[in-house]
Length: 205
Image (cartoon, rainbow, N blue to C red; front, side, top):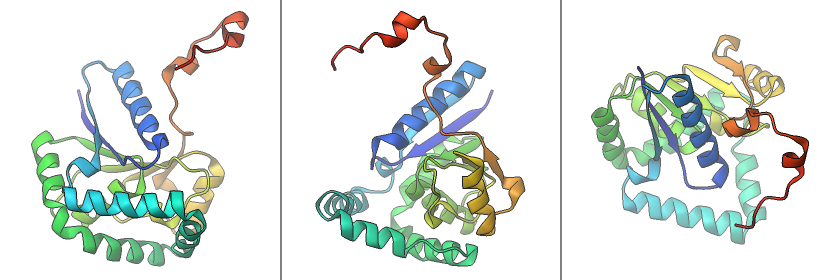
């Protein structure tokens, strides 16, 4: 039996869907697994949650061009650039990470999995500080990997496609830490369907 914590962030439904799909897959392999899916912003303090949420909403929804410019400007090819940039950002969050560390200590997971950059950087920073020693894995839910997906202390990157893994290698991530597994999807996709069922329209939500 393993205790697994999966961290996501609420910015974009894809990260939550990937987290839920992973949790279902873990449980299907062994029902004894304890899998906890958590919004990391529930554990970093309301001040930081409100600030980041406000900034994300204003940039991504009201000023998408500005958000794109910022996103592209923080994407570097060198591993040293990515890690130093991420650590600098994480240092600003340090005062807010006490609650996150307490949650991890309380749940005592065997493994931590992150499906978005913010939880990745927060957990990675705790490891760099020596305050956390849990294995850390990352499920990259983008086909084109941004530098913000790269962080120190990661034991394995699970990527959407071999090309995604190639980009990570080009940026200095060792090949032995990269696994091309695809993006997590619902288990029901694996179940064979009759032709008429496959063509039947889904009911309105």
